[in-house]
Every structure is written in C-alpha cells, then in structure tokens.
Length: 65
Image (cartoon, rainbow, N blue to C red; front, side, top):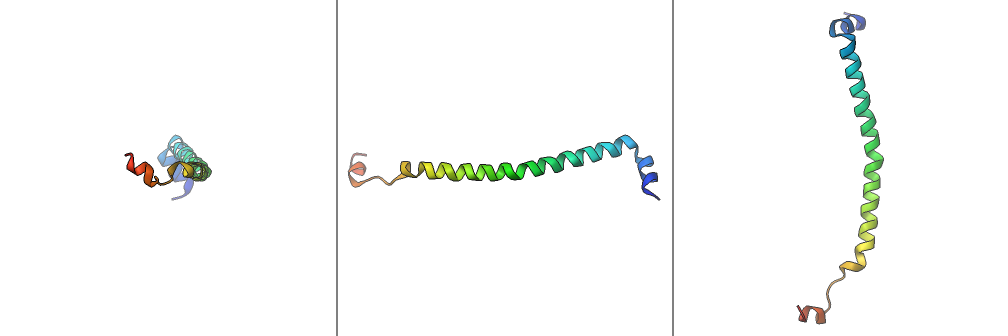
C-alpha cells in the first residue's frame, strides 16, 4: 500500500486537516518557549523589585502588633 493509496483512502481533506493541525501545534509550541522565558525573566525582576518590601520587622514594630 503506497502513500498515495493511503491518502486516497483516508481522504485528501482529512489529510490536509491533520497536517494543518500539526503545523498549528508546532507553531504554538515554538511560540511558547520564548514566552515562558519572558515570564521567568519578569518573575525574577518582580522578585528583585519586591526585595526591599519584604524586610523582616524590627523589634519595635513587633511590639506594636
């Protein structure tokens, strides 16, 4: 059974749909990698910016709580 015979049996529209879905998934996966890297970079920047905000309380501040 040849590839041409398999395509004719399954239907050209079905084969094209599967190829289009495969291409779409591949492109989305390729786009997700740089977006994940950007999210990690933004998370690191947010942690760095929030560092002065998360200092431990002093003894005087603890006494007033």
